[in-house]
Amino acid sequence: MKSHSSSLLLASLLTTAVAFSGCKRDGDSQPTVGTVSLTVTNVVGTQPLALDGTAYTTASGETFTVSTFEYYLSNIKFTKSDGTTYAAPNEYHLVNTAKPASTSFTISNVPTGDYTGVSFIVGVDSTTTKGDPLALTGDLNPANAMHWAWNTGHIFLKLEGSVTSASPSKALTCHIGGYRAPYSAIVTAAPSLNGATLLVRAGQSPKIALTADVLKIFDGPTKFALSNFPTTMMPSAASVQVANNYANGMFAVKQIQAN
Amino acid sequence: MLRKRLPVGLRQLLAHWRPAALLALGGAVVGSCASQPEVARAVPGTGQPANFPAMVYGLAKNQPDAATFELGRRLFYDPRLSSDGRVSCGSCHQAAAAFAHAGQRVSPGVAGRRATRNAPALQNLRWRHGFMADGGVLSLELQTLAPLTSPEEMNTPLATALAKLNADPEYRRLFAASYGPGQIDTPQFLRALAQFTAALTSANSRYDKYVRHETGGMLTAPEQRGRALFAAKCSSCHATDLFTDESFRNNGLDRTFARDSGRAHITSRATDRGRFQVPSLRNVARTAPYMHDGRFATLAQVLAHYDHGVQPSATLDPLLHQPGGRLGIALSAAQQAELLAFLQTLTDDAFLTDRRLAPLTDAVITKSASPMAARN
Image (cartoon, rainbow over all chains, first blue to last red; front, side):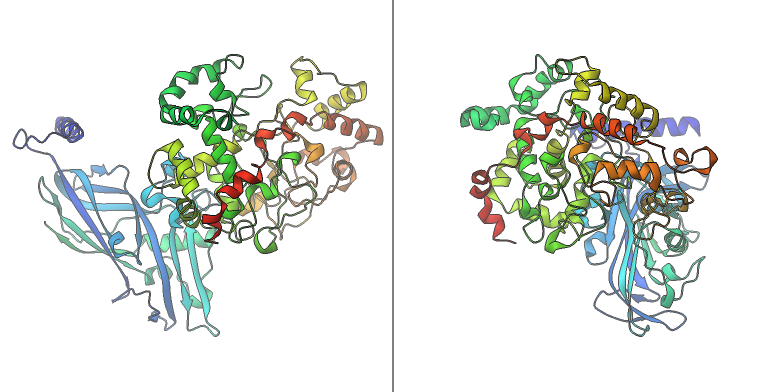
């Protein structure tokens, strides 16, 4: 294994060098990295999520609408059956239901191999939060309104809408963030590949199709009734409960396409 | 200042060649004040005072540059960055008050809205590890975003501020001169403002000259007794020549903290309720009113609080528990007078009246006002 991973490392370094020098040398050597695509479909139970005022019903019969649903996916890792992992560097993706293009992205330079697991942080790691603020560009840009100015850090997940079964209807405001103990909301989701294997090969681009089910935010290790779902605008015990809910079951792998 | 003196051609040349010039000049800026070249000298507050600890936000993090400093100054004093076009950073952070807000317990923001905290003095920010009374903001650059976006202060989302700047030809020109052509983006905006806020160095009070054995560094006998008292009774929190250890402490203002939980607002920990960051005391004679909520109008009231006003609570700082159950810091009338005399020596008139830190003249502002004002 050791020699195998060293040669992998060497090969990926060479590939990187070639990529940076801008040269294309087809056929010189067999590339040892592939690309993985991820696509997320935001749903409520079995229905697609729409931000147009559509009312959705929870298992207990409460109803709600959604106006905003955004979250970060970062620190994506792929695991092989032997337990070794590949951690994709510098992957920070803001998935915004209002922007369909944001629900799909690709991860390049994944070493070829047969992967049996995938995991990611739903949010942003504390190293980035405490790091150089001038590096916050692209999806991490504070101008995306997924960033707390008063308590430095990104909003990991934002769900806004209305609980329409409440009388009068009640605002649904859920902004989850925070990296400090004991209320760190940095959670990792590892949706099962359901026994399938992700085959990463040079020149192939396998695709993981995920769903993200809003209902699981209320229904996980902690069961929330919408009538008393906490308004979370800052790190708290409640926000950690919500984060653990969405880490444990919001994401599900629906399909793995070979190419 | 420099921009006005130099012919346009030379200014453009300097702007164009800035990266190379700065590389060449960087060593001189850090190495010696005496040999600072003209470009670097135009930016105030870049020196390392001998009696200060090392900078946290060192020069290399945002290399001081005359044109970009002036851009930051323009942004700092531009009310068009607020939602009603009336509130700039400088509205509540005024140079003559060490960039606090003279006489305002809590400053009015847009539409006269008021939050809960007193506008703090802005000085020696290069030496700070955290920002805000609750320490919620981690860097000088990001600090800009808190008042900009707060609904009770300037009430402008960052994306809106950037759109306003990008719609203004003068700002486009100024940002391009510093950062190259293209859209004005978040890092450029944060860096430009930090060029100004990082320049607010106050290190030339009579006290500073005294400890550095410089000309004019005389303290009277009562001031010296005040200094000794300060060292004995105050300096465990108001530590070093920055006059703060930046810790979060409950100094006994209240028994409950429903209105403002301080550090707990950031950490959500019960043990942090009522704790606020120890403020610097530089220029303290000019930064009234005092405390995070501006409740005390005078320094005499502050000293009276420590002598006999400290309130008990679970998070009261241990240093305010005296043997025998007494709370606070016992200070006789004579001691209070001597402390007050000493605190006056922390006033740095050169800083408070530095014209390079003052608002740009009306003529300069109005020249470019129309395009952006039309968008408000």
